[in-house]
Image (cartoon, rainbow, N blue to C red; front, top):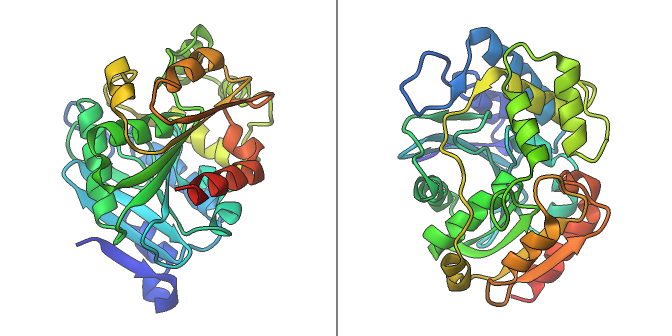
Length: 321
């Protein structure tokens, strides 16, 4: 059974009481091969401080759960009342629940939202077994969804979270009512050389903070990305302080795309540097019935750039189901 706390239960059920389990006790080095972890206790402490500051910018969750899967423990936050078919948010690379600061209010105006910190990424998680490929990624998410008490869910993922949503649609579709993919990485098109530069640069030991911030700003369309922005500070800490051990993501094959039977909305950023958006759109349209759009002028940080537009589009999409 998942560990649970409700904000209505008083001090024992407060956000702080639950999240003190994770990320404060998330693994640090050394760890067995294949397990993501923080470089050391000081690295984890920096991340915890950034994480808590980021969570403080969000609405207070109505419920917080620590879910146990075959691959590790995952923290899930519920915003809104319990419902049969909530939205489940899946964060991008090096990111976690606080990255949805701009989106939660507009999304919860229409529907209950759960946000899950992903295994293999820096966040309120504790990985205990290697994630060897897409099937394992889909498996942990499916196991986590099962514990939310929902009949089915609508997945909403950005960047690598969009990739995770797509893999779950392919490999573990039974609990998925629909999926919305926001500029999903390595899903419909290969990453660009610009993204390779950012990926390599983000893991260089001793990289100056200003260079790391510049890389984050570049991928986000040139917006401010220093420590004054809670999400940027958190992602920068993940880049600097967390050691990822997940296998490299792979694109869906043509056969997998054509076999998808779950309603799919794909929103690609017209100015994304992570892939060629038109090429990605052409591949996404191989999914039967998929609604595929390229939003001109938007960067890979599309969820923060257009939160109201995304919420409205998601609401129209779900209303059609």
